[in-house]
Image (tube, rainbow, N blue to C red):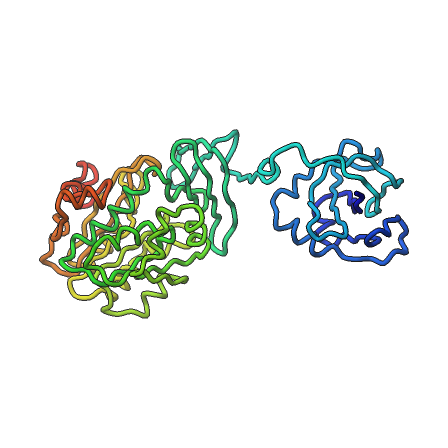
Length: 405
């Protein structure tokens, strides 16, 4: 079997600018008078595959061909494989853009996933490194088994990889959002601290939380009738369904409704509508920055029914105490009840993450659950949260307690 190969010295840019096949079918020759046919279907297929960028230079290429030469192959068959081992050059000389006739030697002697290896600047020597100005002088590293996906969405850099010890990991803008091994601590606490501080939550809103983990926890409460999620980035929702199905199950629950959009703007359309609102945001940079500002908490307050409760991601007392202090001050000016709680989670900076829990009812004590499951129900529904943890999560070390008084 013979194929036609267009050789372009200079790499990918030449190809995406429109490499042309001179000749069609069996009319292989090298004549420039042959009718030009654009390889748009093949180029499109190549662009859709990360593997084409690493096309191995055939060892038998004519000496005139550069080591950076790339091959794009075609034949009369639309299913012709895009990557081949090539045995010999029949037509010479080789010049950029010329055609040559090859015969197939064999299929590639390496597994396809080697050719489709995805790289990312945070991964080096098999280790993911989380380095951020938000926690200067320290870093979190996880050993990478395989990079599963990387894309730049409209709002942020999205990376998904399989780690050797923490399962699948979701990373946004180079910061770990969740891992399969420890995500339940965060999801359960941010959800149940609020839900069990309300006597009868029926209508619940989640802002952010596109991975679906918080929704998964919300619908565990039988009293909840409607659970609505609004996340700005469809990529997080789409990729969580694909790579984190145990978390994303909340997205497809019969009680759940999902909206793609800005949570800030979404809230502006709702007044006196929800019993509980949970803000599962990333850190206060990029698309989540507005979710840590006082105007946002005013919107939360206005969207709650009487006696409503909110919980929000509120950073780490070891690293962000000034931010938390301001956050609590803002909340206290809007809500009669505003408390800071925290949980432990190994893959978050300093092994902790905190929450602001606020209520419109001045007589409500959110430090103690007003509803609670039986011990048997707790064991069935949760792996981290229980009534004792609920109470304990509000007990702060002296330095944080003093700052937040």
